[in-house]
Length: 297
Image (spheres, one colour):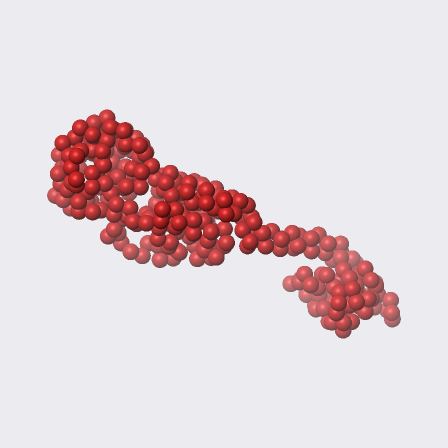
């Protein structure tokens, strides 16, 4: 394996014509230069210098290595400078995947603060619901996944990941503003058993059915959409009722609809996920920190 320090010694020897002169240029002794040249020749498996008395000249292999050394050392210098910039958060890239209501509430605040603190860090945002977003993280297609899971979900699904808890998001009932329960302080989900339902994303839809069945009924789902504004619009038009995360309601102006506290409480945990090695990358760590701060506001 060729080491950069050996290449620097070879270039100095080629430029000065002797080990002693190369040592003076590099600030080391002549024996140290000789030792490093022997190590380099051992690494490449062929002589690089021809020594005849005080005269020293490069072999054909030595000439080839000196010719490439300039580009190699320049590339290493550029790489060192770029890594130092990333480590100092003067540069960097973060690929973030978020579910839609997180994209419209937590993410904007977090990314605005990140840009203000570290303007050289670029963030690329895509949207995906878990578990797809978690799969993208494990496959190396993103650096951070904003995800959620409902209380009571089986544990262990994220054991291989770094989990940064952000907030607990409570589900609320959403009813038309002229609905009989629109001004109720709270509502048990069983009181909505005979209603038409508007369901959200597949995971939320499954949670809805599970909660309703635990209350003794199966919801009649007349509409299903992954788009939260569409859910709110359908409820506002009087076409049914829905159960949405509070975070989703905050991201939409619920015209024609009212939110009602759902009892007993149903909650979901909002987290930011990353891989253990990625958690050590400065730009990723800074983004996780800003997401946590956005969740606290």
